[in-house]
Image (cartoon, rainbow, N blue to C red):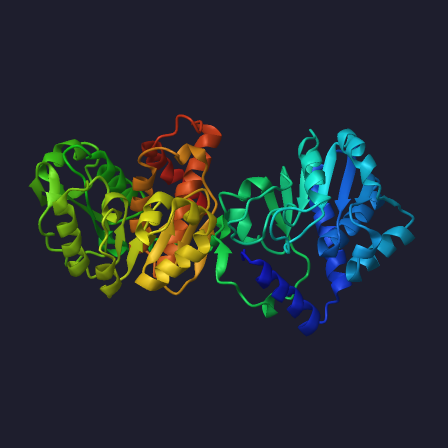
Amino acid sequence: MDIVTAQEMYEWDRVAIQQAGITGKMLMESAGRAVAEDMLHHIGQNDRIVVLIGAGNNGGDGFVIARTLLNRGCDVEAWQVVPDDKVKGDAEAHRSLYLSSGYTYRTNLDELEPSLKKADVIIDAMLGIGVKGTLREPFATIVRQANDQRARRLAVDLPTGVPADESDEQIEAFRADATTIIAAPKVSAFLQRTRPFYGSWSVVEIGLPVTMLPPPDREVWTKEKVKETLQTRDNDSHKGSHGKGVIMGGSKLMPGSIAMTSRAALRSGAGLMTIATVDEAIPSIAPFIQEATFASLESHHGFASGQAPDLSGFDGLAFGMGIGREPGTNELLQDVLRKMEAPLLIDADGLYELPLDTVRAREHPTILTPHPGEFARLADVQVSDVLTHPFSLSRKFASEYGVYLVLKGPSTTITSPEGRQRVDVSGNAGLAKGGSGDVLSGILLAMIMQSGSIMDALANGCVIHGSTAEHLTESVHSRTDLLATDVIEGLPATFRTFSC
C-alpha cells in the first residue's frame, strides 16, 4: 500500500486523466461511491446524517456521497458550506447531477449548528489535500461546531484542516472517528501530530490505472507483505543455515537487556547465538537463556570496554543493549565498526555517541534503530522536528550516512540508504515498556540473518513484533500488564500465523 504526498496524488490524477483517458467526472463518481459504501460500515439504519460539502474535488466527492446514501434510503441532509460560484468544474457537474436526481442541499450556515446537534453522523467533505495554513472562515467555525457534537464524525480522504504532508504549522482540524482514504494514505496519516485527527482509517480503490502510476518509494508494510516475503525453513536446513549471530552489550547493572535480545533472536529463528558481555553479567543472563554461548568482553567497573573479540564467521551482530555509556564503550564500538564484515545493528546505548564518520566509511550494512529522542541526537535536530518531519529527516540521514534507519514509534519508519521507505503501523500501547526495543532488536537481527533483503527483514521484523503485542492483548494480556518478556514468549503464535 503506497503512501503519497499531495503532489504525488495530483500526479496520479494527472496520469489517470491525461494518459489513461479516465475523465475527472468518472474518477469523482468512483471515489464518492466507494467512500459512501465504506462509510456504511459506520452508519446505522436510522441514523440522521449531515454531509458537509466544500468546493474542489473533496466537495464534489461530497455530492456523490450524499446522492449515493440518499439512493440507499439513508436520512441525509447535505450542506454546501461555500458559495455556489466557488463550486466549479467536475464538482459543479456532480452538484448538477445531485440536483437533477431530485435532491436538495442547504446553504444558510446560520442554521447549520442546530442540524449538527441533531445528527447521528457528520460527514466531512469540505477540504482535501490542498489545504495549507490555518483554517479560514467559515471552515474554522464549522469544524469547531462539528467537533463539539456527540455524533460519529467521518472524514473523506483526510479530515478538513489536516495537511496531506509533513508540516510545522499549527493545526485546527475536524477530529474524525474514522476516515475513508481515497486511493492511498497520505503522509499525515502516519505523523504523531496529525494521525489522531484521522481516527481509524481504511483505503478505497477508485479505478486508477495502477500499472501506469509512478511509485512513491514509500509504502505501508502489511501483514500480507510479511506472508509473501518471510523466509521459510528448508527441510534440509541446519543450525548454520539460519544465521550465526552475536549480541554485544550488557553490563553488571543491566544484564536483562541483552538477555531479552538474545532470547528474542533465537525465538525468531536464529540458528546460533553468542552473547558477548562482561563476566559480571553472565551469571544473571545464563539461567534465562540456555541456548546461547558466551564470549567475554574486557570489563571496567562492570561495563564493557577495550577491544572486540574475533568477529569472523558471524552473519550479524547487534550492539548496544544495556552496555552503558562509559568511556570504554565508544572504544569498543569503534573496534566493532572496523572488524564486523557483516550486517551490524546498533541500538540503545550504542547510539549515544555513535561515530557517524566511521559508520559512513563501513562497506557492510549498518542498521540503526533509534526512537525519536535518540534520532534527534544523531541528526542534531529537535525531537519536535523528528515528530513533524520523520519521512524527510529519515531519508536525508540514511542517504548521508549510508545506513538503514528504523525510526521507532506508533508508525515505525524504515528507510534504506537509497531512500526507499516502509512504514509499520502494527502494535499498540502495550509496547510502551522498558525492554520492548531490546526484543525488537533481537527479532530484527534474526530476520536479517535469514533474509536476502535487509529491507524485507527489517519491515517483517517490525510487523512481527507489533503483531505479537496485538495478539497478546486481544487474548491473554492487557495493554497495561504486557511485558517485553511476554512478547518473546508470544512469538511462536505469531510465526504460526505468518507461516500459514
